[in-house]
Image (cartoon, rainbow, N blue to C red; front, side, top):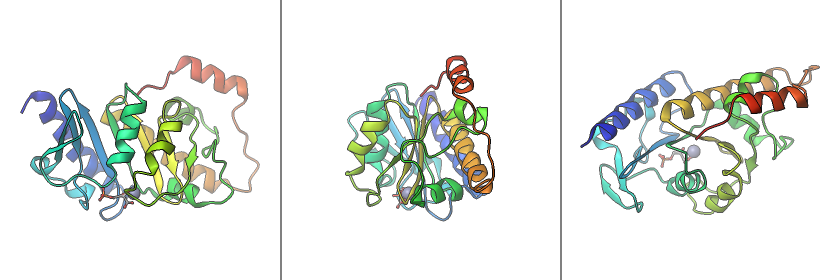
Length: 214
Ligand SMILES: O=C(O)[C@@H](O)C(=O)COP(=O)(O)O
Ligand SMILES: [Zn+2]
């Protein structure tokens, strides 16, 4: 095993535990992946992100064939749709974090812009977040829905399911996911209050200064 793969395995275990320990995805929900030079690492299906074993992570080759470790997450079509749409993506994170998932369930969430730009950090880290219609978890039906949005959006809400974020590294995908979840919490917390949204010019300034990667 080369250094890149060893580091990726360690990163998946460390970040998985961190996300689970902070209550960002319960039970065996959620899945993580990293793109390597010679393939991919995925969290195994039905695994708890808090108790991953570096040696049992699922290894897939560059063609997407399972070549080692436990059977991978059933959400391969979801992750591969991101990797195909975003050549710069090196990691994909899917969680069932409470507030982003709540927004994915609300009938009046704007499907083109689920997380309003109320703070600069969400614009800098996450950008505009669309919602794709509900599909059964693990279904390949999600792939075309993701391919239609992912080239322009590193973060997407799966309708009635939860958030998924791609990043230029596992760390940056996790940071963007945390920002998405925190902003979703603020959006729900301030519902019904007179919230000032960032102005169009303020958003354009942030987008020009802080380019989204991954
Ligand atoms: O919601 C689901 O069932 C999946 O999207 C999920 O979060 C966990 O599935 P596995 O990664 O196959 O355990
Ligand atoms: Zn899920």
